[in-house]
Image 1 (cartoon, rainbow, N blue to C red):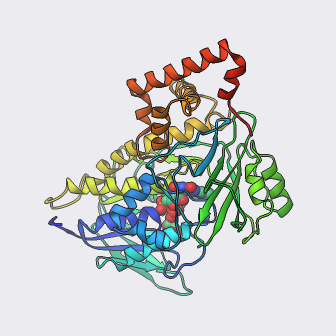
Image 2 (image 1 turned 180 degrees about the vertical axis):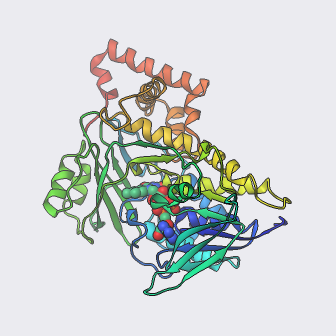
Length: 470
Ligand SMILES: Cc1cc2nc3c(=O)[nH]c(=O)nc-3n(C[C@H](O)[C@H](O)[C@H](O)COP(=O)(O)OP(=O)(O)OC[C@H]3O[C@@H](n4cnc5c(N)ncnc54)[C@H](O)[C@@H]3O)c2cc1C
């Protein structure tokens, strides 16, 4: 790269958003320092700063591709570490909106692996990068600015050891990637800036997760099993994702506070009550390898950093610190990688400039546009739960989108073009808007019309087209 480089950038948080941001920043800054509360080196198990890692983490294909571009060879390293490649069309059985998706060969190949393997593989690459230094076991406690409080100039951090002294680090850009516990709203308020407005849509999802050994005599043809709840009555769902080391990551979840228990008997009983018995049947005889962990606070939360009246310059916020999406839809890590890619694009337009004044506003507005689609998807689906907080004022476009998505699901399986497109949208390779293009809409509406007509003229034959609950 031949960009004129700024001197130093600091990233707060060394998780997916933080490490991907660090990587793209190396193209524009001579040195990047990541400050992370936990110790990452040699991490073989879950760490405190990312409690969600205990729960099933699906990485969408778009996320995998972006990560592989940023960290060349990452996918191969993951596969070498035991990650499992999956054709989501034929090796993933998914029960969505009350019906099993048809089996349909695709050219999409996302992978399944533990969040620990994913993070550790990214970390290994990031820590080998000559321009990245990672301060592990350090917590950022304060944001520093110039005298006029117009721009950020650095941070105060402290090693997480007794009696550690505070240390000051200065930089040309500070990136907050500290996740759901971000201090930025308070920091901005203390500095006299208007903090971001916050939107919350809560369908009160709750997770309980256990790791199992994949039974040696397992004869199923799926590698991934997904059973989604069926609003408005059947609130329970579950997934089985493959993990390296011949293991299954089994997450049961329930919406609207109908949460799965974390005790042995209650866990299996809950599995028996999903809209399909297949998750229960898979784990009934399988050998558990872990305790059962719960996670209860997974609402959609969006801080509108794209709409601030005034920006603290040289300071940006990314990842879950901006948007935390209901994880049931598996978008967070991919959107984090999309955000870092957008950061690189924004920095490109500052090439040759003397400072980064204006970057904060430009980036946060651009990130706002990226997040809008995944936010609409997650909250639109969550609002199917009638009592969801924020869901009472269901607007007309959301209702229309929900109705249209019902038609899309009805059409898949009956129309290969729609099916292929749907899988690409599910893997976030294509934007959901492709389903709303006139030609695709026509395809969907024609297919639904054919189905409805068949149901009217020959109700017996049309039974095969009805949603299944097996
Ligand atoms: C239960 C659950 C399941 C999920 N499942 C999926 C899934 O299937 N697919 C998917 O794509 N996404 C999923 N997500 C979302 C995904 O985990 C996040 O989107 C992703 O980790 C990106 O987050 P992040 O890097 O912004 O923040 P995080 O991953 O939360 O990381 C924040 C980091 O900042 C560090 N930190 C915090 N404060 C400080 C500080 N003051 N100083 C230094 N370091 C600090 C923390 O230790 C941590 O390492 C799930 C989330 C939850 C809650």
